[in-house]
Length: 195
Image (cartoon, rainbow, N blue to C red):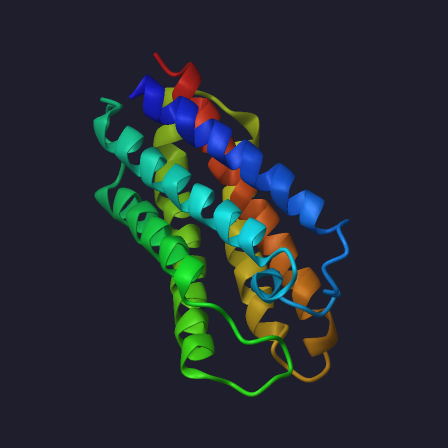
């Protein structure tokens, strides 16, 4: 369990640092408008897909760590299942590439959107169902705050699809993904310090 938590923590740290780097590299993407997945269609597409795969493996390791940690009372099975779904969706997004924002929708792009929606729902469910167990096992001050923000930030994704807010959809998505990324990092850290 400890090795899984270490791997997950490092994977999330590298993912967040790599995603921050993509925002300053000449990707040709506009962070206010373009989705994060649009990086897959940039000159740094291989880097983006590698970061997404690493994140998926980290989420899978975190799910396994939760399942085998021996926390009492046991973490909600629905939360662990949500992490597993999140890992599978993120792994699927490595191969199922999005369409660039504002371009014609393809089968791959539609599949990517379905995986993205499922991953957003899974991330909110994981944070909602697992934070209580983590708080009891290892008091981490940010877990509840980050989990509490996940649902309203997910709702903003829907708002971002309306014509008035479409031009800042990229920003709204990035706020949600940052919140989820920090929750995953904090969850892995909490499992690391839990005895």
